[in-house]
Length: 118
Image (cartoon, rainbow, N blue to C red):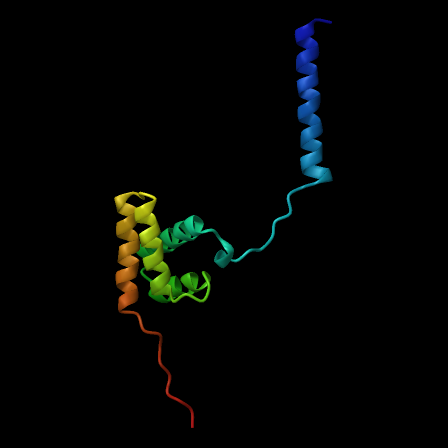
């Protein structure tokens, strides 16, 4: 058997062992993590995704519910922090416009106030 043939056989065996180990012996365990546990740069990406969805759906209540998953910070503050991070990370200007549009919508958003019960 030639050296090259043995080399490629060993590479194939190594790949096969790696796949068996990764798929069956120790597969990745997916954990349901909330967006509030993300790093700052991923939170910025999350706010951008919410802004993109808001552009299409034009549903501010749904956008606020999505932003509430980022934690205790008010939605408007989350968006403003994300815009500041996006400027720092040099996001595309169109993305900044989307996030600014969401921030503008949040400036006028008030949750439905209900009459107090007697």
